[in-house]
Length: 412
Image 1: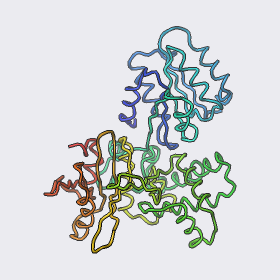
Image 2 (image 1 turned 180 degrees about the vertical axis):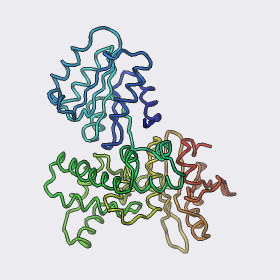
Image 3 (image 1 turned 180 degrees about the horizontal axis):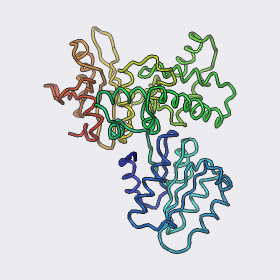
């Protein structure tokens, strides 16, 4: 069954012939190669592009290993350019090519060439977009299947689909595997032989136990504020292992560079400034998160929060953890807003909770939103299947399914 990724395909189509190198980044196994080599390739063929004007190279294939040498790659591509018509160059896992930036910049100077590349490590790509490409790179960040994409393939009810999605995540191949055992075995193999080993080998980490323990700790504390010092203390208190906070911070950076986790910073809403620490760490895929803790601690509330964060990021928002300071009985208190989502001139304040059936829960979720004095929209997203409604204070409550299945759910 073909998995439609129209959101990303349209982004690529919109960027066609924009004079920049189109760079598709994201966690391994999220579908980058499928997007370019299948969906985009078929789009090009269907619009009449000759096959010999689409040049594809997958650098993780043994047959193309010799092309990881930059000059050989450049000469290989040049030899295939036979005329002045448009050529599309699709280079998969470009980070395996040494000095790939020089190759891409050289290709960009050829007028009838449009270049598309994938990569799985921001250390090799996102940083270079800024420092090396100097405005000549256009990054498209790709994530595993969203819930809306997942449901286009799922045959059961939306409630059962939700349970499967928050348990096993949205890596495309997971959705093609039948049965609990098959899904858990696949995720177990991927977490160890692909994600962890990739980070260990790429960064030449000698103490693999420390990295594995760190991943387990942050997997167990999704939705909780933390920092390297606190995490280092957890090592000592729970595992009797002493580790420096600088080492922890380095490991966190490696995991971010591999797109396994993302860091959400704390933002002072009234003061309009960032607070360096603490932060929250969310997993790009909840199935991987659950695999790292062997499916223990299935806290649906925290997993739902993780899914909302990733959905906002997929939609192109910058997402922070909001903090607003209040004073009561001569004491200052900090109230937390789960997410402050920004894109251009748009800003949204969002709370996530399983339900609002309890009066105390409703008061807790609404309280920080009521303390915000600007006119931007305020939302509470709940697990309950409810009709979207707005109360007298302007706070909008909507169900998680409405939020996830409607890409414009925040805009009206």
